[in-house]
Length: 357
Image 1 (cartoon, rainbow, N blue to C red):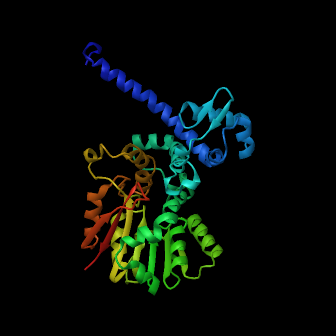
Image 2: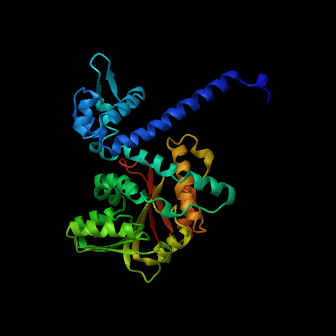
Image 3: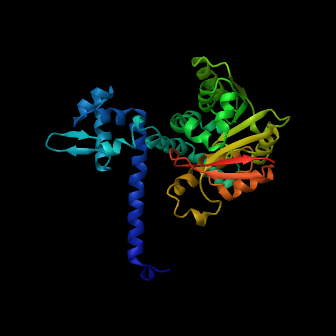
């Protein structure tokens, strides 16, 4: 198509969108900085303050704080008064940016921008030659994911997530055997173990660093009913030994997700139940056009979830494997009853409750 045949309005609108995209991309990095340095938390406690006052309260360098505040001002995160040279974080913004916001804190998610950008060179090579970027190239991934999942679990695990499984709370109080596959740093296991002392909890993860963190937390809480083991989820198998198995956001990036699901099914006792928490979305891209987080999720898939699986010659399901594919794989693994629902505290995931006959 020649320039003369182009729709000038469409051209200008798209170019304008790209300018906005570049601004928003940089603001995401600054949002991550604001979260990691505690600047959002500090601002939320202060009246209108100068950059020097903000820096002193946060214990940070004033020159960097001033530049960050200016970026936040032009990005419309922070309000600025030129007459007094003071900055203030509106309460309506703090509700999405501070640690006090709990699950409503979206600033934590911005850490992923820098994390994914750090492997861009390797991802470009994968586009050329195939393969994947190994998990070891994401040294901060475990801690970032622990923060993201922790804010949901702290707010909703006991009364929200577990309550989705009919009768489970009562069984946990009586005493059953539970496993969290791909447990990461084990926070969910430790929360459950503390709440339900009559039950026995096991956490598996292939990261020795994550398991060490899980064990340390369990020790600090004085738990005697939580154990953790470095284990490849694809090696799960019978005989049946668990009454309840949970997986939180870990199936889609497995190298062998079919083997993992079959192993989970085999490890369940009669009457056992599997709770799988994973990304909400469709397996078909055209159904995700109006998904509010779809661009981010497909990008995270490219830069992490899909590529770590492909690095192991795995299935490469990707973050947006979707609810249709998930249902198909659950049933292929032997689950005859599959239902799905959501919890208000978790804007990202869908919760599948799976049972065998």
